[in-house]
Amino acid sequence: MFDTLTERLTQSLRNVTGSGQLTEDNIKDTLREVRMALLEADVALPVTREFIAKVKEEALGQEVMTQLSPGQAFVKIVYDELTKMMGEANESLDLAAKPPVVVLLAGLQGAGKTTTAAKLARYLKERQKKKVMTVSADVYRPAAIKQLETVSNEVGAEFIHSEATEKPIDIVNRAIEQAKIKFADVLIVDTAGRLHIDDDMMGEIKELHAAVKPTETLFVVDAMTGQDAANTAKAFNDALPLTGVILTKTDGDARGGAALSVRAITGKPIKFLGMGEKLDALEPFHPERVAQRILGMGDVLSLVEEVERKIDKEKAEKMAKKLQKGGSFNFEDMLMQFEQMNKMGGMMGFLDKLPGMSNAGIQNAIEQANPEKQIKKMEAIIQSMTIKERRNPDLMNPSRKKRIAAGCGMDVAEVNKLIKQHAQMAKMMKKFANPSGMAKMMRSLGGLQKQFGGGGGMGPLFGNNDKK
Image: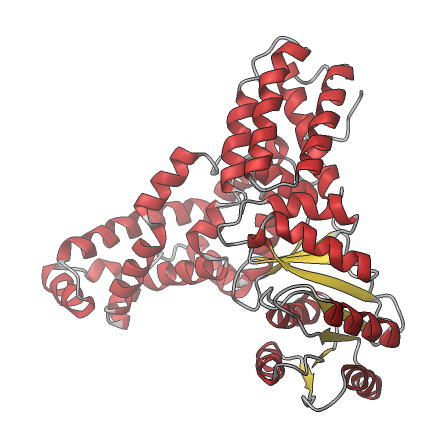
């Protein structure tokens, strides 16, 4: 979502990192560049003005920390102000209220409310271990009721049926009673949307809110609408006591301005980001991590959490034990590694969170290499092998290669390329299986976290040893 903004900001900040000291003269051009970068990213003009004023005030009034050069100090100021603009830290849902906790989703039609309801249900079930029920109060679109039923079933949340002939208030009150009877922890209510804000819509949702008194009222907005997302959020916030915002479609070609403007304009926290179409593509919004990504510093913490959550530990441990006992890394193991990578959003999803990967040159090189396409090719070749061949890479000979190539519709050169790739991976996996090799890898990960932030060992840029 922030690719263009990241590229512009990192380029702008590079101009000041070699400065001997921070003065109004040597940060003037950089501030102008930062201002342009934010406006191009569709950040609201008042928000941009306030941000630039605060950065300038901090930069000129600060005593530079001894651990940082003046240039680094300026980058840190930009990072701190970005984080403040987006809300300091993640604000989770209030699930401590008496069950069922009612979560009301509001927003315009097409923002992704119904899909978000299912994503949120899955998130609460899997990560918070809550019993979740869903209900649709969108009586204007029977298809929306059916859609919520379908996606709720997919994520294992119990759906409470509603009819287009019922009144929204009656639907939700009945759903609350059913949720109590079935001892549900959370009831997610999907409401009707419109193509634009109108008095009827606002009147109806205000009436519904007053009647059911939800614990959480979340505004769901499409990040790709840019500055309009912040303006729409303000209109809803003026009508309803919102408790937070969910930004959807952040994996699209959005310019990032919505994330930077919504909090500043509404005063309400962004609680979640919708990161794709899949029903597990909902992530808590961490302002400090997003600020690091905007400044091209990656998001190592989110990467580590994703690995912990999505990697099949049982399979990984089984393979590690096999390699430690001297077993070989075969084509089946290689295929399993590709499957694990796909669970994390593919190679691009993994690389996107690594520090330094936002550089335009690197991005172009990766796009030209098209790693996702290459992995699909390799998967097809392995799937064309017999089980015996997958488990015994040494069996590969010219006649087998020819048969495998014909089976997957490729030439022998592609099969040879896979075999070479497998040999390199086998060598690497053997190193990681060795305790000393694993120790080296952990040390390098520790170095990344120290350099780019995370845990208790944050480096000087993002440390807790701030002395102004």
